[in-house]
Image (tube, rainbow, N blue to C red):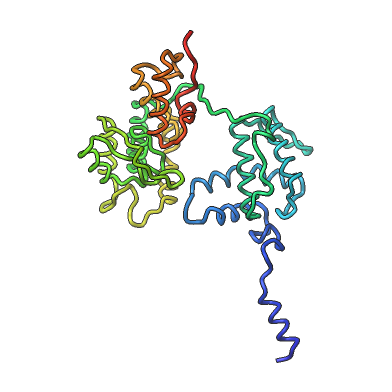
Length: 342
């Protein structure tokens, strides 16, 4: 073999570092590369909901790049991400029209912050650092509003109606998730992965059960215990009844959370809406309102102004605890703000 052939072979075996490849080696098409970067950043075997949410929101950033002729993420700099922030800010104020006549609709303050957050995640996933991270508060000029003002559309009757509709449609395990979310305040992932046998044992022994499996961010805390009542027991027994044989939760041996979401949960989203419940999140809001009103023995701030500030704070702390949040302020996004009676 000649020296020329040897050197040629050596050159072909070398791999270029990611920063020298288009879109940092994540793919030649920016939209495809963004999805790959997000998957690699969070790992492809976990954080399914988080990845799906960022990919959906990423469409706005990808379109922004497209309209500005940017096809390679390596050429995105701080000036460019700040200009994206200004674009999002304009969409808070009203529709945004591109030179070719394309119109992007107005967005809420909360969603605008989410778009900035997703852009930060995308660039961190590409670059491996936070050099291009921008502050949503600074670039948008307005804080995220997280105080709920509209009344909750997820009473127990509506939840049971949705669960019945899901059973008729052949989604028994999806029906169980609906009931667990409304009765126990579980997130969808928590309802899917919760150890139902453990919960039943704890209830039989203590009259209450902890929400441990599938919690957001992997947070497992015995502090999040919820006392059983008739409706909660009804939901738990039904989930145990419809779970796959030999399983401690709602997944079968061959199931994954992703497959369960696609086959059981997604069809149930439409069923929920037909029953008058906007989202699964609304079921948690209904649970939160129950907790609050039980403590105050009266209506939530969404229905009338607060009359007892001390009890209000106690109730908010309990709502946050039972929903699995560390901050009391989070309760406002479920049961409304602190309007006081005159």
